[in-house]
Length: 207
Image (cartoon, rainbow, N blue to C red; front, side, top):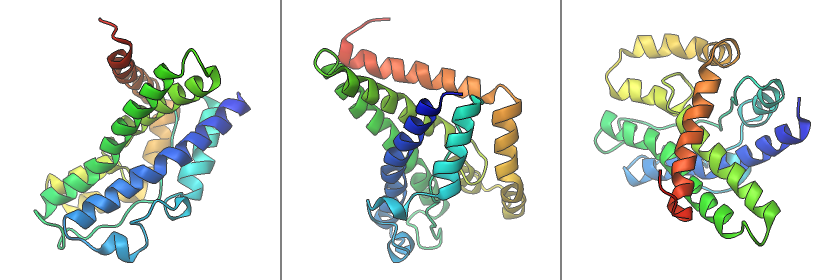
């Protein structure tokens, strides 16, 4: 139980959650849906996007228990009826969040590499941020509410009744999957592989 690591993960999650949720709101707005703007989500103001349970409490607990990192921000509401391209537009909005995390991972990886020999603490923090940002992108693609991947189920024309039923137990499914199975380890492994590939872009390493 590493309390220091848990605090770091929660702080990083708060930092990474804001642009992630903003990306959803921005994409929805660009596609013609004013719902996020009306609900105050088209902003980089942190409290608008941070969820007490999903962004602070659960990440702290799962970090301490070492059962895989579990966390999310406040979901951005969208109205598919207003979105350009309808359900396909909804898929684009859903993918905007994970895409923003990959962009952030590239930025943090670059900072980690370029500060490596000058500011070790900054480099270490940035490297952890890059890895966690990739992890959030991968984790959010799980097709379980309230994660972004669940919106792809709707875009794939899965019956709404199925989605609603899944939403009722989504939190429990995630908790069980991350604590009682090897899912958390697999997500960590995949995320580390992707993060390593990103770092190689800036270190000019070859496989």
